[in-house]
Amino acid sequence: MAAAPSRCLLVTGPPGVGKTTLVMRVFEALRAYHPHLSIRGFYTREVRESGERVGFEVVTLDGRSGPLASSKVSSCESFTWPTVGKYKVDIASFELLALPELQVKEDTDLFIIDEVGKMELFCSAFFPAVMRVIESNIPVLATIPAPRLGRDIPGVARLRNHPGAVIDTLNTGNRDAMREGIYNQLSSLLQKR
Image (tube, rainbow, N blue to C red; front, side):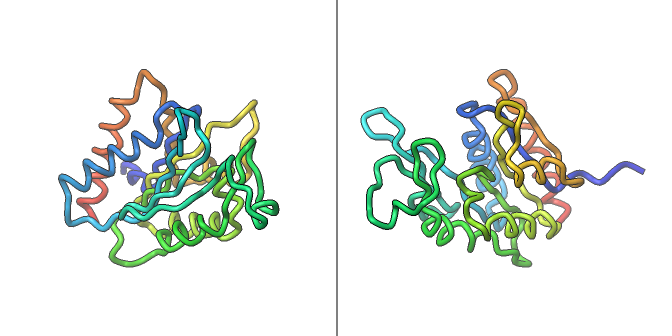
């Protein structure tokens, strides 16, 4: 008997390789060819000023957005925010937008989570919400960062080692084939739901 196809697809790769672009193209194709699907989740995108990256924002799949992290913020409350490199992480904004998108509901066909990374994991409720999604039997497409200098973020390592997860490593040479393969795998899974 063949093993059941994985319902947890994790895309990893170095920063800037195109993980978010791949996920968004798969989402757009699924929405175009399967408009009846209920797809929940979020993605993160860079915020640029004069060509320079100054932060990131979180965007829900229905288009709502808010700050995730910034190198420009200097409010009184931001002095207590955690930092990743030069960026201060706005946990409250992230929680407000991302956590409701990860509520497991019976009518949800697919979750998209971009990304499960260091900034997002500063939110203490985020990783438990991700685990509930993964264990819900609803298909998940998520991105995770590649280990840096051989070290993995603990929450990311748990996902990477989850028995139901399949990990695809994205690089510039396999982007198109991987996008098509993930789209086909999700389409097949979603037709069986």
